[in-house]
Image (cartoon, rainbow, N blue to C red; front, side, top):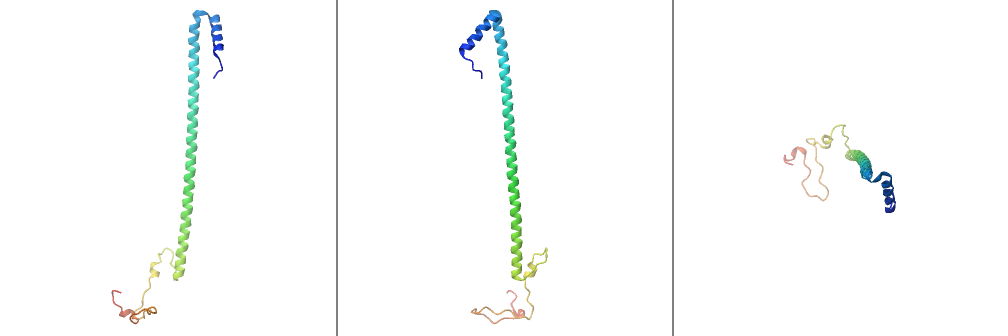
Amino acid sequence: MFDIGFSELFMIALVALVVLGPERLPKAARFAGLWVRRARAQWYSVKSELENELADEELRRSLRQARTDLEDARDSLVQDGARIEREVAQARDELQRSIGVTAPSGASGAEELHETTVPGEDLPAPAEGHEGAPPQRASERSPDA
């Protein structure tokens, strides 16, 4: 703190002894020690409070950074969710176009996808190379088929 050597300290003590005298020197030394202790205590108090403020500011900065990171992650998830919804809707539309069915809005489309067979109408013939019975009529089919 102060750059005072032993010889300088000895010179100050000698001058204080000459000026104050042997009777008042111990009382003055105690008084000076009291003020030095108070100054040190005040210095440590200011230093401690400054360190606490810096730690609080660092904590606030860390919380701001964490909040920013979380908001970025949320925005990314929202964007990814919207992109996935668009891709699913596009795939659904392509599937419906490939089947040739257009579902009304709000409907699942399952009702249109199920084909009904009109009684008395012939069923399609089996594929080439596939052995089997000749085509049956819808009314001739067995109930478990």
